[in-house]
Length: 246
Image (cartoon, rainbow, N blue to C red; front, top):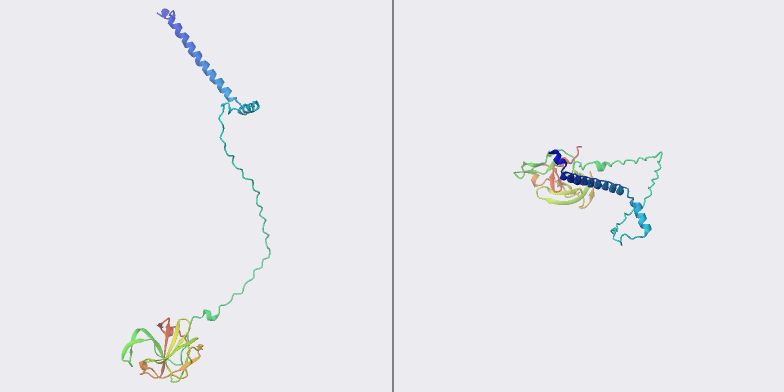
């Protein structure tokens, strides 16, 4: 049977076609290898130079496409480095010490008052608790301080100010109001109608502004004395908060 296969014509025909196919595959492989070598060895710059020398317009021939105009990037001019001159160092700089001005005693000193007359306190201020008033037979606040004093004893300005009012009050007799120009007013009751400074006059602390007189209705049961009040922005204050110890 082997002899029959070897001597068969079909075998030789199959071997022939197999050899042809193998040769074709080998030929194509060699061709691709040569093509790669030629492509790798292609010098594009030399090719362009040769085309330019020949004068052939490849765009008109349709061999290459026309390149789009691409704007060239603008190159900023080089700026010269800025030279910074060193600042000369000053030697032996003298610092002058400015004299510190001492604040005046008047600016540092809080507002204060002196006693309105010579004498001792016989009735203290009571702005919150009611006290009994013998003359009126009722309970009420006592808005000031009462100082014992003899009739015609001098009354002093407790602080610098201006005479604002002088008027007759039903309860406190003749009253003098001294405006201290800072929201504070001092009020003097039970004074005489004579020896009183004029309204609008400026007075200094300790200056005589009147004299002790007869007691008013509210304190008629008491001997001669000075009733003294203090108001700050219209509100009654305890005068002893302002009067300095003497």
